[in-house]
Amino acid sequence: MTMQFSVGSIGDDVTVVKGAGRLNMVAAPELRAAVRREIDAGRARIVVDLSEVTFMDSSGLGALVGCLKTARQAGGDLRIAAPNEQVMMILRLSNLDRVFKAHEAPETAFHA
Amino acid sequence: MLEPRTDAQEDARLEALEAVRVLGTPPEERFDRITRLAQDLLQAPMSYLNMVDRDSLVVKSPQPDPGPAPRYPYGTAFCEYTVHGEGLFEVPDARHDPRFSQTPAVTHYGVGSYAGVPLRVPGGFAVGTLCVMHPDARTLTAEERARLETLGRWAEGELREHLDEPVAAAGIRGEHPHRPSLHAGAVEATALELPFGQVSGDLYGWSGDDTTVVATLGDVMGKGSRAGAVAEALRTMLHSPGEPTPGAATEPLDDALRRAARALAPRLEELSAFVTLFHARIDARTGTVEYADAGHGLTLLVSAAGDTTRLSSHDMPLGLHDATDGWEVQTVHLRPGDLLLSVTDGVLDAYDSTLASLDSIVAELRAQPGVAAFFDTMTARILTARVAPSPADDDVTVLAIRFG
Image (tube, rainbow over all chains, first blue to last red; front, top):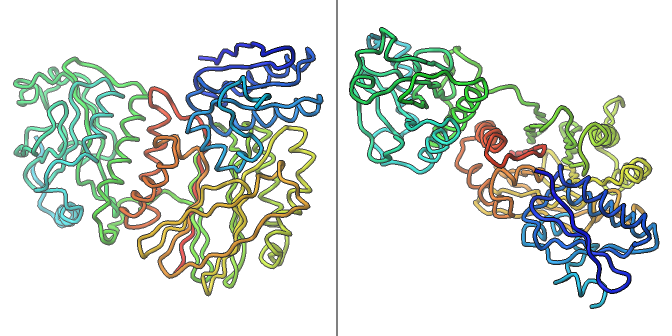
């Protein structure tokens, strides 16, 4: 039942981390670990592709915030792409939509 | 075979049955969904929700064939035992049970096993039953029994919907499980806490006196013992139980939040955690509410007049918001009968996980005679969501503040 994250890249310096299913208390540590691996490998410009995430709870939101901090500490940034309406609701409730602007697709997240 | 009872206790029970007003009424989806769920969760081909009157059993919601309520005369049904018993009543092998082997349920309908729970209304009277039946002889697992009891509590909440006032207690059972509450001036605060694991990352707190009540609901993002420790620290900071005079009641709201945010900052930083928080100060005489919302967004003003307002803000959670910027303090006014309802986001998962869940919650609240009955319905719903095929796994906390 664990969420699998796949990693891809756009151009030379943007890494896309993509998961599918429910980003909850079970999947949140895996997202943190997946992003941490990329940053440790020197890739700190990250897009989290949420197009196939069907549901996110506060644990998932916590993981996104943690990943953002890690990315910024490493001199990079973290952006999100293609969240569904439920994910947007969680972002809006916490007013974190001000921190995480939703980009339509991973390709435009850093090159809008 | 049980004989109909004719004593005063039975008269009082029948009065309670009359009060819930579900006899002689059409089938209702609010009961049918419970019996459908009982079928699914207990792998039972048959599930009935019955009302038991003086001399017959009235089937309110039959599955698998929902429809107008049939009536069965007394002396033939498992549920008579359930309704006059204390708790869950189970018949694992009806064909070999002398009490039931010759009843129509067994000889005509082929029932091999039965399990049912009594449905009680305030006062402790059992007015009905929720049951499942299976063609085979079988015994429920402990988990299945717990599910049936949970569904029974949900059904009890639905039955209370039409109660104008609680039926006078007859001393049979306590009216409701104990829930923490605070009465101060015209304010009554009550909390419902349903942690998912051993330690909750949710927190609520209140303090004050007859003139001012300060109340808080929060959710520490991050689970387990470390989130629980942050939650406890925050509750203590905002409601300083050790102080002889309640400092929280006199301290400006934004000062209190800034103080708490600064003190917690190192721990939140270390854990990469943050806290969404609703923090309010209520004038217990006038109903004026000052509040700050740190990215919580799940607080509603449910007015007695019938409208509902969500109290939101543009401020972010503790741990992400720059404490020196402070939190905006907004003001609303409660009129007598109005209610502030604040929930943590785990509640939404028991509905459709969207903001429309809040509308459903308010509809359920308004359908109930009071906060206690609403909390019973909510409890059953949350517990049911936790045993569903795709189970809800978040802490749930609800804070209700009634004025007047």
